[in-house]
Amino acid sequence: MLPDRTSRALSALDAFVRAPLSRVLDPGALANSPAAALALFRDVAATVPAYREFLAAHGVDPASVRTHDDFATLPLLTKEGYVRRYPVARRCRGGDLSRCDFIAVSSGSTGEPTFWPRFLDDELAVASRFEHVLHDSFEADRRRTLAVVCFPLGAWVGGMFTASCLRHLAVKGYPITTVTPGNQKPEVLRLVRALAPSFEQTVLLGYPPFLKDVVDAGIADGVPWREYHVKLVLAGEVFSEEWRTLMAERAGLTRPLHDSASLYGTADAGVLGNETPLSVCIRRFLASRPEGARSIFGEARLPTLVQYDPSSRWFEEHDGTLVFSADGGVPLVRYHLDDTGGVVPYATMIARVRDLGLDAEAEVRRAGDRGVRPLPFAYVFGRAHFAVSFYGANVFPETVSVALEQPQTRDFVTGKFVMEVKEDAARDRHLHVAVELAPGAEASDARVSAVADAIAAVLRRLDSEFARYVPPERQRPEVRLCPAGDPEWFPAGVKHRYARK
Image 1 (cartoon, rainbow, N blue to C red):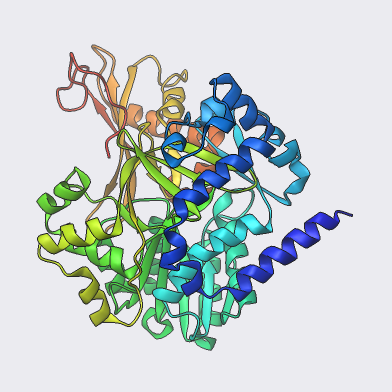
Image 2 (cartoon, rainbow, N blue to C red):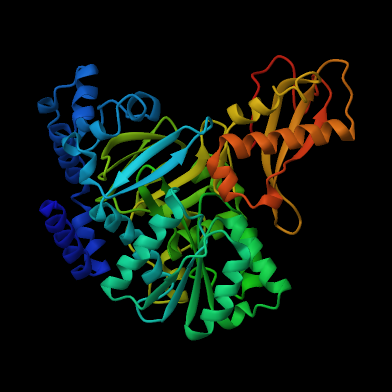
């Protein structure tokens, strides 16, 4: 027996259950978040063997880090330089993996798994992010709620983590009942039909394209979505405000600022931030004002825009990408996500959109009595390493390259390609891959089919997330074969980019 586990779990659960959300997100506590980040560093440097070795290798004496300015000079942790360099146990406190009771798995371009252990207290920090959404957006503290987890189940982080967090909220007293069909569309529809009439609202939680497939299939099958008062919790991909509007029309969502919320998270640390009625209000306003978006985010395209609790997840901006610090089974100090994005203080964001003509706080308050909290904002465009996100699975160039090196394809292609995820007029997403033909080679239907089959087969074989997350009918990409040196896709004299966002 491990009595320390019992005391840790009871203490963490008692604190979580007894703390109302208003206390968790108290502005006074948030003001101390820089000190909290510094305290996390000191604890990790003292208790985590891998981090002590990492600091020593970079010539850092932990005792010399006394202020937050010192903290901001600490070397960044990366997946290659830290996670893959040190065994998972040595990245845990005391070098002891048995301190954790659950392990989630993520896999990258090679299919080699990365393990992320955690314990109950780690889950409770993430449960607070779900609580923020369910309380402020969906009023789930006073409405009997059916939560339908449509993320893939198994070793992957999304489905199991989400289900755990929802159950923790039920223990806290939220009238939430959770069911876990995973990404099995017929099972989702069967369970919704059977259970939703017994609740005041139904929350679907999953990747955007899969939830759209579910809603569309339900419409075709006569599911009365409007009667179920549907809400959506989304994760894994940036989506347009046009997509949100279409989903509102099809699923009967009547409160555009409150009926859907996107989560920003990673396998590394769970949910890092979440959409709020306020961030949705700002994003919808900027959707039709690309120059306004450019003035705030540096680009006219819309990123995912979330608010976050800096006392739990401390964000920094580094050369146009995001860095965060967070406690967990594997605590991370200044971990470089490689996600393109940035941070904007609360007062700065409110002032900037007011200058553009939006009083965001007043707009949200007109729509309801919840949703305005003075939390900082983070915005995320996506991975910097040119992966594309499709049904929540990252499709990496390295994996697609393997498909073009197979015997059935390698003789008529150069190996260069461009992949992107496109939305059609029905707002369905498709994986498109433009492939460069070898000089003198010609396109044919047979060759298009051979390339598409090879890419699908390799992705299923090497990327477990792709194989599990993406519905079988969507796994075969749409392939276009282009002449060598095609000026649109493969211009000469410039560095090739394997993905378009």
